[in-house]
Structures are given as structure tokens and as C-alpha cells.
Image (cartoon, rainbow, N blue to C red; front, side):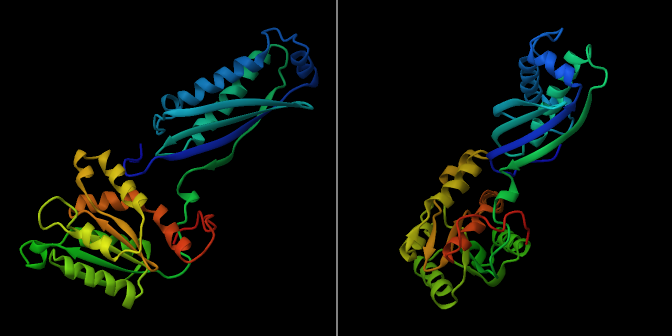
Length: 311
């Protein structure tokens, strides 16, 4: 199984269909309620629901999913029956295999119940019709070049007593995302200096994003959130809430991070924790959805027009 532990839960949906070709006389038997094994549609629907719920027990690499909805409908045409399934779940991985399995098993159930009167039946196709909720639904390509800065706030790192690992983790993610790092700076936990640097990044350098690390804890020297609030024009609490909620599922100490996020002009400023693990988990929580902020700040549509395209 693939490791999906870094992914965030989102609403996932999938629709699939299967088509069976059969004699018109067989369809007439079903319509007239004269099929030897009874009405096949209710049985096939129940089979589809059970199949969706048990897909991980049939397909080895599928994850067990907490399904929120499964439906199965049938369309009867000339010489054919079309099975249509729909599956929904709020989880970390998609539900297309559940929808496909449901459609396949429904078709096989119809075949089993009608084979006694029709040896010509053929399951001609099983296909995915649509899916939503994965990475392809988020903006994964910036509208144009994005410039950023990394600000490390730590007395011990600035004094050379310990290496910087959290700031390096942000730089690594910036490189992966194609963000142009205009500056990387390490400073001590001094409120006035923090404010000065954030103002310079936003007002003088006109950067798109500034990510800070450190100073979000509860010690007397941790002052990053307060200093950041004083320079922001608009708080964006959802960003920090998302990072903390994601982290809380992985460590009970994530709730103790007091980091904030918001805009100064058109510059997005985000406080991240001081630990490398905290930074990496926060970045996993925020990307790729955070990319949409750049479109919004620049007045682009709220719809992810570039969804599915990777930078």
C-alpha cells in the first residue's frame, strides 16, 4: 500500500459505469417481473453497496475507507443494461476503485441472475466516469512566478549554537514548488527585529510569500505571533488552524503552537513551528491548497482553472 499518512482528508467522489449486452427477450422478462430468480435490480444494488464497502478486501493495494455514500442505479435500453455507481468519502485517498468495484459486482450479479435465460449475455465495459477531491482539484501551478523569503527566528541558531534544520526544510519545499527564494535570513527572537524584517520583505521587496520558523511556542522569548500580528493588515486564521489540526492528528503537542498567518499588502506571511518535523507537517497540511491564495490575491477567479497541471 502507498503511504497516504501525509495527505489531508478531503471530500472524494467517484462515478463509474458498467454495461451488459443481452437479448431483448431477457430485458422483457425483467420488465414483466418474470425472471426465474426474481427482480435482479434490488439484489444487484445491494451487491454493489457491499462491494464498495469491501473493496480493500478484494483489491490488495486499496486502503480501507470510511465510505459516506454509495449508490447504484440502472438504465435499461434496447438490448443493454447500464449500471451507474457513485461513491463518496471524506478521506486521504480516492474512491474510484470502490465505484469501479461496485459497478463490476452489480454487473456480475445481474449476469448471475439472468444467465439461466440468456447465454449470450456479455459484460462489455467497466469504466470510470468521473472523480473529484484529489490533487487535480487544487491549483498546483502558479499563475506566474512567485517570490518568497524564509525567516528563521531563533536565539540559538543565530548565535551558532545549533544548526538550522527547519528553515532548510522550507527552502527545500520552495525549490520543489518552484518558488524563487529571494532571501533566507536567520535572526534572534527580538520583536522589533522580526517586525522590521517582515515589513522589509513585504513593503520594500514586494515578495509574494514569507514563511517564518521558530518563536511560536510558550517560552518567554517566543514572540513571533505577536510581532507578526502587529505588521499584518489582515489575519487569515484558517491557514494556521489547518496546520494545527493536521499536526494534532500526529502529535498532541501541535495545539501548543501559537503561529498566525495573514496578509501585509499582497504579501502572505505564515508562521511555522521551530522544529523540522513541525515545519514539514505544516507544509504537508498547507500545500497544494495554499497555492490558490496567490490567485486570489492577484484577483484571479476562485475556480482552480489550472487544476491538474503540475508546475
